[in-house]
Length: 452
Ligand SMILES: *Cc1c(COP(=O)(O)O)cnc(C)c1O
Ligand SMILES: [Zn+2]
Image 1 (tube, rainbow, N blue to C red):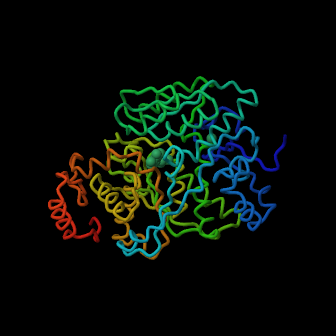
Image 2: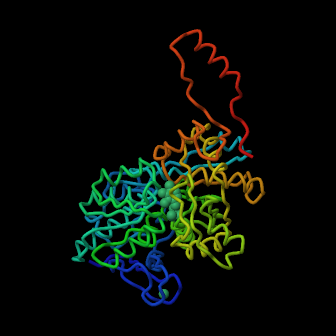
Image 3: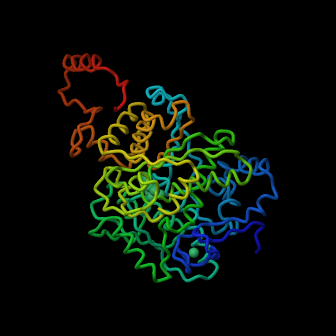
C-alpha cells in the first residue's frame, strides 16, 4: 500500500545514507552518526499552510482514530506510511499551556507559559515519542519482522512510557534502570506494566551501554531516544505550541535536557513548521542543565568547539542525570540554528525555583525547576527579555517526584537550605491553639520575591 507521503531515516552527518523506517537500524552504517527521520517535503508542500492548519485543527481532541491523539493528528508530518490499525496510542499530547500569570508577574514577565507535557498517561513527555516508536514496532511485527521485545535504558520516565505502550500493544518490554537513582513512582510503573525490570548497580550511562549490548541481537528493538522515531513524536510539542497560539511561534522556549533528544525534537518541529510555510520565524531555544550533570553547558562556554562527557553527579533532577548525552551532535546543531543558549542550575537554585513556582500553583517536577531557575538567571543577565513570549517545557508531572517535594519542605534535602519551606504543623485538636497558629501564619508574609 503506497502512501501519499513518505519518510526515511537519513544520516545526520550528511553522508547521504538512507534507510527505510521499518529497518532495524539506529546509526548510520557508513559513518556511525545518528539518524533522523527525513520527510518528502516536496510531496507535503503540494498543499499549502492553510490546508495543513485546518486539517490539524479539525482533528486533535476528537475520537476519530487515530487522529484524536496530539501526535497522530499530525500523522502526515510524523510517520505517514503506517497502517492506522497498527498505531498504539493512548491519545497522548493535546496538553494544556498553563498561563503562568502570577509567576510571570512576580518575575516582571508579561507573557510566560508552561507547556504541561507531563500531564500525560505515564506522567512525562516520554509518551509523545513512545507512541510513535511502539506503533512502528507494531507495524514492523505485522510486516513480518522478527522482534521479540523492546528495550530501553532509563532514568525512570522512558521505562514508564515504554512499558505502558508495550503492555497496551501486547509486546514484551525490558527496562534497564540505575539502582536507587529513580523515584518510587517511576519504578512502580514498569513493574505494574509487567516489564522485565533490571535494576543495575550503575548509573544511566552504564545502563545505556548495557542496552546497546543487548540490542545487538536484532530481535530486541532499541527504544532509547537515539532511535529517532521517538523524536518524530516529540517534535509535535513545537507544532502544538504554535497551534495553541493560533499558529504563531513563541519568542523563547526553555527546556531541561539530559540525553538531549527533546531539544532536537523541539528544533525539528519548529523547522518543519517554517519549511512548510506555517510560521515565518524561529524562536530562540534555551537548554537548561543541572550543574551536577552539565556537559553541554561546559561545551557551550567554549562555543561548542569541543565536547567532553562528564561523570554526572547526583542531582535532584534525576531524569537528567546524564554525563554522556547520546544526542549531543543533534543538540549542538539545533542550538546553532536557533540562536541557542545553555544555562545551568545548582541543586539549591532548582529546588528554590520549583518551590517558589509551586507557590503560584505550578506543582512542577525538579527538571521543570531547572528550566525555571535557568530562566530566572537569563532574565537577570538580560539574555532574554521580560516581554518575550516565553514557554517553559514542563517535562514530567510533579506527582512523580513527591520525595523531592516532601524532602524540600521537611528541610531534609542534603546541602539545601530551602527558602520556601512549608511544613505541616502537628498539634492537638484544640480550638484555642489552632487560632494561635493561624494568627502566626497570617502574620508571615506571603511569598513575593524570587530566589536571587
Ligand atoms: C527524559 C527527561 C528529560 C530529558 O530529556 P532528554 O531528551 O533526555 O534531554 C527531562 N525531564 C524529564 C522529566 C525526563 O523524563
Ligand atoms: Zn553517515
